[in-house]
Image: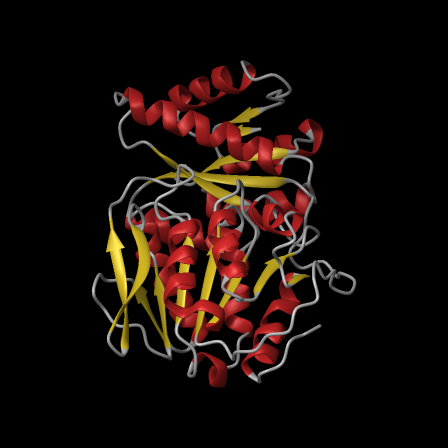
Length: 346
């Protein structure tokens, strides 16, 4: 189902999606209220939901659509403004599966192609999974039994599709005493503007300082650094200090920021004293960096398939046998606490 007040935008989306094998557009609506009237009969697997609409906007319609069609995946679409970034993150917190940034101009052919590709890719990634990050899960599956000789000196976290909600939940579950002892560097696949707003949302949850990473800044316990959209964030050692290295190097795995860049830098700087977490996400970004971390003796914990929106990034690492543990989302924060106490959750 496509929900957008712009007839032109709806027509474009309908044309694009109808051309894709295996994707059928079962309904379209110009407002959230019209979508609510149609959703039960149309019975969609995915709703592409615009934010800015008259009568009933996307943020208002979202919880009602989720209630009317349990299990539906909602992709929020919006232009790249600070206001829309705020609203999109509120939507993710309220149950939207992910967001896709709209081009600011329909005359930008390259941006339209990128929007179409991302929209289709995310629909294919989430459709039919019915994953619930809040679902109860069984005991963790361990990919390997490895002792951890070194207490973590830095926490590095990577995520993509479904990641903002999972990241906010994880950070909210970490005790203040752990965050006060551990520097944290986060790569969440997000465009510019969104990462600054995301950092503000994390700060409200974490109760500690959270900000976008700045080149040359020293990492220190009690601060969470979020890689800025459109730039890589790595780490370099300068004497006794570890500094952030924020740069515009080539995309890795079509991503910038890239989890690989952060993880490879963490392996080089911290070795076995790095602790890596990989949350829900589409694709394989982080796998190459995870190999470097595993070779250095650093533990890697990945979110399990049941609680992931998309088990792409964590699944790639798990299938290669690089994960110390494969855990439900709500078991990851306790595992970090165990590592901080100097023991492995084997």
